[in-house]
Amino acid sequence: MKKSTLALAVAAALVGFGSTAYADTTLYGSARVSIDYNDPNSNDVVESNPEANWDVFNNSSRLGVRGEEDLGGGLAAIYQYEFGVDVTEGGNFNSNRPKWVGLKGSSWGAVTLGTQWTPYYNVIGIGDIFNSSKVFNSTSSFAAATTTSPVLNTYLGNTFGLRMDNSLIYTSPNWSGFGVQAMLVMNGTCTPTDPQTTDELCGYTGNKLPANLSDGVDMYNISASYKNGPFFAGATYMALDGPGFSARLPSGQTLSSVPAWDGDQWGLAFGYNSGPFAVSFAYENGDLNTVYSGTSQNYYLTGQYTFGNNVIRASYGFLTPDDDRIWLTDNVADSYSQGDLNNYAIGYQYNFSKRTRAWVEYLGASNDGDFYGDVGVVSIGTRVDF
Image 1 (spheres, one colour):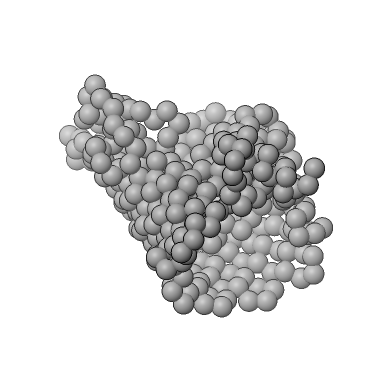
Image 2: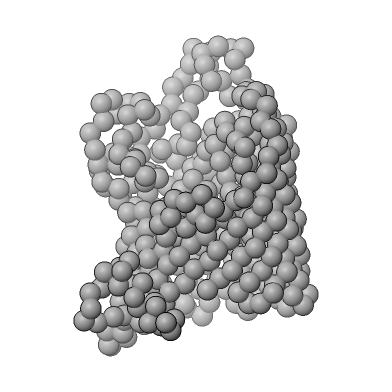
């Protein structure tokens, strides 16, 4: 079966366009699997003594269809349906990977609705260069070192800055290298029992935002970027329009929810890619993450060198919270250090072709606080795109 015929068949099955007419449709996918050696270390708060282990790991493999239909007059209908495919342990056709539909105009840009990459990631994600999906990541501070499959905390936008469902995005045309994006997330509502406690935020059902966070726009995200030749620069800002959950303890300390449901976060990113060399730097600042309680900063630097079929990569990240110590209970003695985090990764990639590669990558983290144990991971994998 020819690829175009197969693409139309899959599009009809997955998207349901019917049998009378088709948009210009492309079937695509990416299989990404590695053998990982994980060496997590317990933190001071949760002393679970996790054991080192080997694991065949799926690195965000996916299958999708995308396309557009020319409607005339410079107007086009556009769409994408992408599904996560776990080629190691099942769970196919799930996850909040991009699934959206919209209209595009040659003079005014595009408006799309569905589950989509955030403008935040489209700026800060310039540093997402490694093959292992454990590198450009972040996780809950209480699980970072105790999990048997640890990740690096290198991206403060991982909680709300990846892909958001129930979203509307406007993307501007390319104005001589300059462009803007704006996202609104509207996740409906539900009736909580007690709207003054975080436990009563309801309606998750697989979404990243509670349905009762607000009655209108739950989250908004804007970005502006400029690309000219090898140079890239971008800025982005996102905020949640939810209630604030915090309490002043008799000891004088403040207990805040993680993440801050009424918080915000912003970032800057710069890149240079010329010939065999590529470098990027990103800075994030805010409290829309689960790495720390309160506002924190992230500095992330990457570098890449390509020669022939070979690619060498390296990165370094530094995370630091504004509040070094936090109190989890109303006990003056019951305080913990959030500490600073150092994340680093190096990798080698060999390109067999434009679509097939193999890699070896090492990622590690060290800290000086109570919530994180040191992390070490070796990832040996392969990726095939089609």
